[in-house]
Amino acid sequence: QNGLCHYNQSEMLAKITGYVNVTSGNITAVKAAIYKHGPVAVSIDASHRTFSFYSNGVYYEPKCANESGTLDHAVLAVGYGVLQGETYWLIKNSWSTYWGNDGYILMAMKDNNCGVATEATYPIL
Image (cartoon, rainbow, N blue to C red):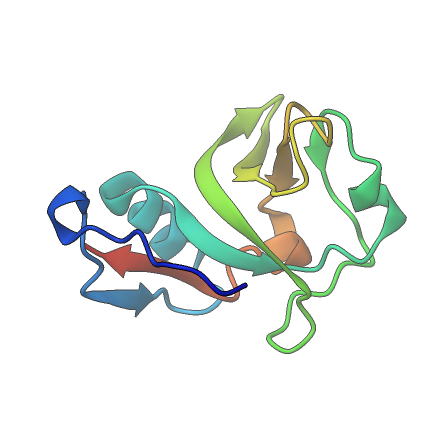
């Protein structure tokens, strides 16, 4: 669409000066990045119907891929925790608040399920 850009540098709240790629497959490093820097962008395998229709609980899909080049969806890892003895990532999806649990999913850390820790990155502000 043609038009004017309404960018005003004086209203800029933060400037991204770079980014950090977290060591691939390193769950401890991804947890540390979330703790120290906030939300981390991650790639996941979202190709399974079980992901599309997730509603609650800790999601684990044994057929999920977790290797670079097999991941097909970008999401935001915003936290982590333990539910009934199972460690998980708190993931914010972009498919609206009508999907999952108000737009979020608890994804199992076990076996780097669906590749959460494979391609993680965060901005340097």
